[in-house]
Amino acid sequence: MCVESDGCEIEGCSSLDEVRTLSGSMSPALKSSPDLHPCQPGHKFRAALLRCRSPAAAAGILSFGNVLNYMDRYTVAGVLLDIQRHYGVSDSGIGLLQTVFICSFMVAAPIFGYLGDRFNRKVILSCGIFFWSIVTLSSSFISKEYYWLFVLSRGLVGIGESSYSSISPTIIGDLFTNNSRTMMLSVFYLAIPLGSGLGYILGASAKVAAGDWHWALRVSPLLGITAGTLILLFVPEPKRGIADQMGRIRTRTSWLCDMKALAKNRSYVFSSLASSAVSFATGAFGMWIPLYLARAQVVQKTAEACTKEICSSTDSLIFGVITCVTGLLGVVIGTERADPLVCAVSMLGSAIFICLIFVVAKKSIVGAYVCIFIGETLLFLNWAITADILMFVVIPTRRATAVAFQSFTSHLLGDAGSPYLIGLISDALQQSYTTSALWRFLSLGYALMLCPFIIVLGGMFFLATALFFLDDREKAEKHQPCLHPEEFVVPTPKPLIKTDF
Image 1 (cartoon, rainbow, N blue to C red):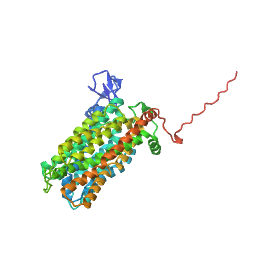
Image 2: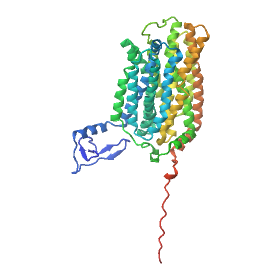
Image 3: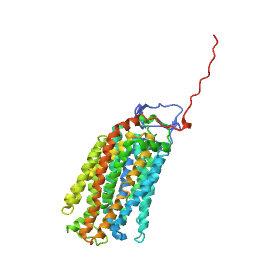
Image 4: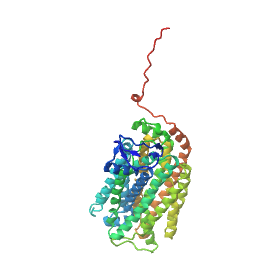
């Protein structure tokens, strides 16, 4: 028998003698009382919603939202050649789309991290999803004379998506512990490559089906509004740290104290720098690889340069499928444990295969796809492990801030500049020599060769993380909060009792 907060009795909500709580513990069921009265229909509906608010359901909904987050982000990349032809911009101009998006994303992330540690998280998530969905839908109606407005719309989308990426992992972190948390975070971060790959597939498929690339931006907003509604209805707002042994920490530390602690956390700092290297490579690859392979086929004379209103989407579709599959493999492999050494080895291995892409692409597209498959699998292995490292070395009450600033630094040093930088280098190389189909292909390949060197640097940062991980984890488990002077409680001295003998 279950009882609502207003004293009404909800029939049939449990036939067991115990009721499972949000954290998974069992508590004795409340027995009927003559003071209870039957629930009204509205109360029964609310009770039905509460029964659906299980931790697993919440994690599933949040993961679905993360899929849509990244699907919307990479739908543009799926129709990049069409956008370039429609607006008539250069490689650097088209790379500016992702750079503006990421810059607004990373600037907004610390703000949402601060809000996420202090206010209702699921409300912030839902508002963010509704915002980027409306802006994305509106951007599909911008005419070719206003490319600057299209670029601005991508910046606004970045603000909406940053709220989701900064806060949603912390809710999962408060719903699960130990191996269960690692597994659920792995599922959540599986949404990054899965959503990215589906973004390419959705963009290319919607464009072909409608005969207009603008329709690629009109599907994900409808799904986003659905996800925002599900979050409001079915995702609980757990107390911060309730699922941890560190749940005993209840003192709210200041923002300045949080930042000082994170700056001294060596595992957090080095893993954030390593994440920047991963972000640099994935941002550049996600934007340019489909276009690079399209140019490779023109050089091999297996395809012609696009002169039609609707360009071929074969490369975007194949790259999207590869991204989905490699993301699944990478995250599954990375669910074993939070080990920075695994990340370091996978990064170094990834750099080798990514270098091979630019060696074999001129002769064999199939060989390039094989190298992409292996390189991306090793690269995507790091996402879930990096997130779990953060959960182990940062206390619950500052995790949203930690996630937000890790997101900020990884984007600032990573994909905020890499798409534009690659396009800028490609444009500079094309201007230095006579432009031809071969040189357009080679110039973009030479620019992308910067990525393997950055990936190797990221592997070095993961090795540095491994040196301090165990110590920082122990410090987090034994954490004593830093308090303001006014938060200290001075015990009142007991009055002396004079006793006459």
